[in-house]
Amino acid sequence: GNSVTQMEGPVTLSEEAFLTINCTYTATGYPSLFWYVQYPGEGLQLLLKATKADDKGSNKGFEATYRKETTSFHLEKGSVQVSDSAVYFCALSPSGNTPLVFGKGTRLSVIA
Amino acid sequence: SAVISQKPSRDICQRGTSLTIQCQVDSQVTMMFWYRQQPGQSLTLIATANQGSEATYESGFVIDKFPISRPNLTFSTLTVSNMSPEDSSIYLCSATGVLYGYTFGSGTRLTVV
Image (cartoon, rainbow over all chains, first blue to last red; front, side, top):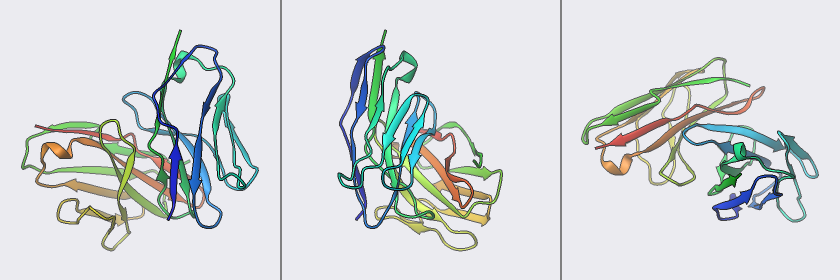
């Protein structure tokens, strides 16, 4: 079946540190991959996505590259800010009309 | 992308009662889904809301406990029935369409006392 595994949190970083949150997936076919962010007390917001191998999604300084050979979609940011503190979810869609499958989420805390 | 208006945003309910959550999308979408997010956890799919027919439920969720309606392409409701404290969660609706990708409502934070 389809599944997403992402690194356990919480992750605590100092401001301006480099961020990596690992995400690997299991899926049949060629899924689309997503990163969502959930700020405290809020709903889910799409951060970035990639729909095919070697695509790079990027937004707000965050990046992730769809690596089919390693079935990975790791999230990176070169310099985190306090405002990036949130829970990050990796997700996949097996096809356009199927529900997203989510990882467990990784809580990021950035301290000044 | 499509915008989903979800309400109520939060509620505190007595055990044994029911709460109906509504989601209105500002444009026609193909699929709508309902998720539950228990405290500190990831999102778990409850069901797919099918337009004009019965919802498709995931293992562990039943229609009697979580009846769902979707009378048209832009509106769906989820009812949490006969609530207990274990139902305290955030409930989110999601929609997807050819043009819009996946969009989420802002969530309903439910506390059962």
